[in-house]
Amino acid sequence: MAERAGGGEPIERASSVTGQAGGGPIERASSVAGQASGGVPIELRKVTKAFPGGGEPAVRELDLNIPAGEIVVLLGPSGCGKTTTMRMINRLIEPTSGDILIGGENSRDIDPDRLRRHIGYVIQQAGLFPHMTVAANIAQVPKMLGWSRARIAERVDELLTLVGLEPGTFRDNYPRRLSGGQQQRVGVARALAADPPVLLMDEPFGALDPISRERIQDELLRLQEELAKTIVFVTHDVDEALKLGDHIAIMQRPGHVVQYARPAEILTNPASDYVEQFLGGGSSMRLLRLTQVGDIELDQVPYATEDMDARDLLREVEADGRGYALILDGMRRPLTWVAQTDLEGRHGPVGTAGDPITGSIGHRMTLQDALETLLNADTDFLPVLGRRRAYAGALSLATVQNAIQAIKARERERRLRRGELS
Image (cartoon, rainbow, N blue to C red; front, top):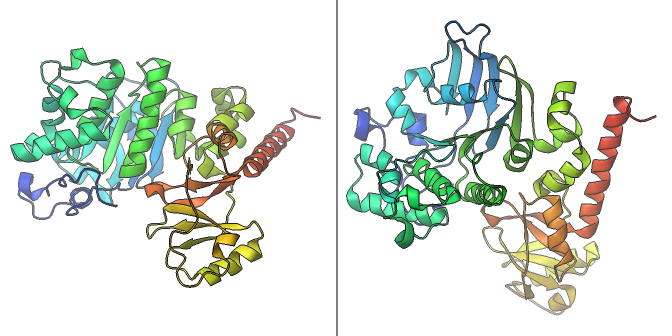
């Protein structure tokens, strides 16, 4: 992971709490000096949960691999085992059988209190302590870990800034004085306070109005670009799952996964009638509105770092035929568009010749939003930025048009397979 925004200190090793030197993988993931922690993988192996007198299991022999640094959404109707599955990850509910590995370590071998201090947890309506200030709410876990007052104060201000709340305005406020969206932001900040590698989010935005909900969803995606936590997100809202999830696990009673795939694959190739019915109609429009730019094939234009020889880049631009290239910095972040005419007769490193980048598209942006951005741009192509704002490809109106045609073709093929078209 790159450096944490704001420069706060990392979570302390478990030895400061438990006396165990060095701690396990979940502690090591959050204790790289001077850096924020990234996520760790989570693996569920034949996990079953049966409640006494509850009839069939709430979760039955569930297998699930959750990659490090991704948002994985558990999606399904009420009673399908989503929240039970989530709560077994941090041992708020103990599995009846099976194993849950977090960063390769079996959760059964981790003291429950120690485990939960390294897993952030966000619930609906934030669950803030009403008698505590915003700062005191965020500081709970760092206090348990024995952080100094100065360090806690710095971390509180850092996190409030990170979630878009001005520390001077919100630090000493009480939850009742905040809007629902602001309370949820504080809830996310509290979950991130000790820099955990794993974040569990149980229908966290379900009580918000549609506008606030969309804004805080966007905020979560922005935070994930910076932090790359492993996030397990529970929802019954299809559109929310499609917007947020890197992968989606669609669950059905009794507590098993019927399809686990990326959003575009689920929309274009639902695994069963149950999945298709749960998704509802209008899949083609959903694909345009919710398919992320990172899910389509991007265009590639010539690019170079500032130290590339201008003559070598000129040859690439001439061979490409479009007449321009993209200049990147050492972290692959776009700097300028350079035209063929800017390179002709130039010797030595290309530097930052050309025109500054005036617009870009995030790889999590939807095709619908990307299309609107392109229509308002003053260039034919816009660079697409991945994590850490690194260059991932380029997008033009033609690229989007080709993606739409491919989506339509997949949708038509799917309907032919199911006999909906003659």
